[in-house]
Each structure stands twice: as C-alpha cells, then as structure tokens.
Image (cartoon, rainbow, N blue to C red):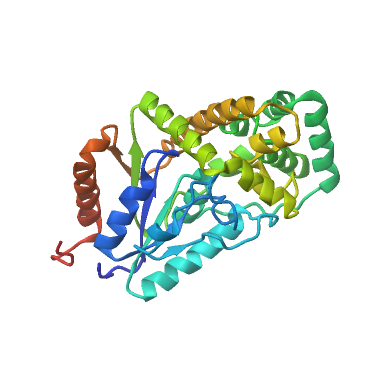
Length: 324
C-alpha cells in the first residue's frame, strides 16, 4: 500500500483508446499497489449492458474492488456532471480506507472532469429547441446538423463526430441559450488538479489497434450482442435514451428496426468504433501530465507492466514507502 503524506489526495489514472488493453494492465497494477478501480467509461454504469460495453467480467472483478459499474438502469440519463460528483466522493472514501484510487477508462471528458477542476456551465435546457434539432437531423441528416454547429462553434464541432447527435445538439443548445460557444467555456477551464495526479496513457500502432477493435466486435457478435440489445428494448429501454446511443447499441437497434442488414450494422459498428478510437487519442493528446506507454507489442506485457510500475513509484513513492 502507498502512504499519503501530501495535502492533496492521490489519484492514479489509466487512459487510452478502446481495445488497447487497459483492463489487463489495470488489474495487475491494482493488485500490486492496493488500488480500488473506478471505471471511467460512460456506458458501463448501466446494468444489462455488458457485451457492447466490454464490461469487466465477474471473475475479473474478484481481483480488485471496482466502482461506477452497474449503478443505473439503462433508461437513466447519466451525465458527466453526476459522474464527476460521484467519483470525487469515491476518491475521498477510497483514500480514507488507505487505498489508492485508480481511475481507468476511455471517455475523455469524464476522465478529464475528475482529474482537473472542471466547472460545468449552469445552463438549463430548452426541450423545444432540442426536439427541433432532433427533427432537423432526422430530416436533413447528422452531417447537416454538424454543419450548423461548425458555423457557430467550430471548436466544439472539431471535437464531436457528426454521429454524436446528442452532444452536437447540446453544444448547439448552449450557444442558443447563452450566445457563447461551448468551446470558449471549455478553453477557459483551469487545468489545475485537486489531486496529486499520475496519469498513464496507452497507445499502439494505429493499424494494430484497428485490427484489435474489429476482432473485439467479432467476439461481441459471437457472444450475443444482438440478443443483449433485443432484451434491453423488450425491457422497455427507450430507443432514444442515452444508453441506446452508445456504440454497439445504436447500430444493432437500426438492424432490429429493419433499417439495415446485420452485415451493414457490423460494418458501421467497426467503422464508428475506429473513428471513436481516433477521437479518444486526439482528446487525450490535448491533456497535460500524461506519461505514455506504447503497447504495440502485446508479447512484451511484462515490460509494459514494469514501465507502468516505474512511473507510479517515481511519482508516488518516497523513502521506500512501497517495496515490491
């Protein structure tokens, strides 16, 4: 266990694109350093969404305490602001138990909101405006909606994929309500952390990452992703809910609704997940304080683990507090 001598509590974070191998490394580190893992994935909070979110298995959860998994029903509109509040409370509780809080995930805004003093806009909602934008997207397409955002907030448009309709509409809504681009507010954020922070990022050769993504999706399909989505819909989860807009769910919903073939759904899922991984890397490369590990060679897992351990001990360990 690592002792805490500083005024700020410690927070270890592991970030990286989907399918890069965060889970395997995180479990090893959690066991060696007495960590409790906090999921930094925006979709793993939902019960019953296991296959499409690549949720950690019950067996893997036996190796370390995990938080922020299976805490809401899929119809619940979970937000980044709620995530930030929950995780900050968890960090305090874990630290009080003498354990090291370990944030692991790939949802960039969620991770960054915890790591730094991110203040959310106190902006309400305009449901009539939202519905009008949804209708516009249905009639004109997501690309046309995204072009509307580019005109008023090019900074946010550059970060958001046209298919991310919910966040595109929210950025348009913020501009509609305040007259100020959301990206201007984001740029004004203080990049100071309330924690003694150690962030490790995983990266790998882009083509190898894409191959891993496609292999993972093939496994998801074999494990029953279509049946999982069908069960969620039959249980009453709305098609327009936040949960059903996640990768792996919206594509299968389109197939189940008869809009596209299953082959096309898988093709779109692989394409959209590759694009998502690219956006994840772009987001993380704009964050400060990340120490990167290239994990292109999976056979060198022990070497990657040693490098991760060296980063942690170099940041957190003083006067031989930790002895392997």
